[in-house]
Image 1 (cartoon, helix red, strand yellow):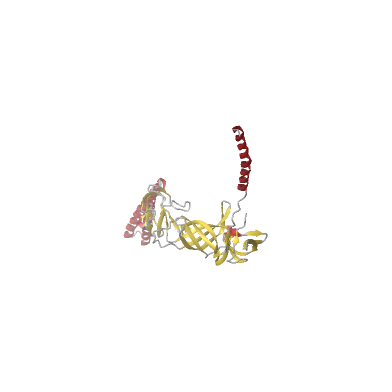
Image 2: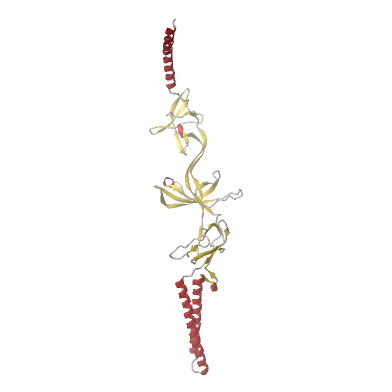
Length: 363
């Protein structure tokens, strides 16, 4: 056979054989692959229904230390982390007196001195008259009383001048320029620096905070619970607190307060809770610090050592809850009665046993 006839024959042969073979291969690959059924069995385990509250660990009592006079923060005697006792010196305030008040106080001292000198001269004159018999002892007693009153007024005026000028009444042993701690505890923050201006606490102003002191041995968890769960919790319930710094360690606690009023947090109503904590002994070097973020697990209900199934094995038909149970070579639907669920595993009350093999529903 000639060459010009062999080549066309081979091409036609390949077309007749290759096209059907390729189509058959594509048809086989396009068929859906049937995955083997996912089988599982009920298991005995604990089912715990809990809610999670997000919040932080804070001291139960945190006290802000404020000055009793306005002025300049002259010297700080503590820094954050120092332990202090009630009455310990925290800072010194240097008073910058007001010009008008200072002038008024000085004028008051001068006026009191003039009145005292006048009373002293009157007393001396009356005393001389009493000696000569021209005045009675009653008149002498009157002017001596006036002299004592004028002396008292001078002392009060000098005290006012001292307070205006120095912020202290040293004669009475009260030094207002000395800021002292009012409680025992640890210094948490010292927001002011030496040289800063500070304002005294009074009825019109809360004053400048020199430092914050708290007992770090008495910490509580403060967090928020959703309104859907607040009706299921109560004071006295145990909870477990996990601090973000140590996710593998839990602190036991007891719920001691649930706020009677909710707050709006990004459109959701939340209720504040507070729980007392049992702190670690600190032997491992871990120190729970104020403000650490934490989550609290509050156990709402619990079932111990009950038969459970994974909720992925369930399917629903109207009001019925069904599972696919293996029977011979096939599977049949069977109604089950469930109890407590934690969202992943559900307690089985009736319908199946621990020996049954179940199949995960398709789709």
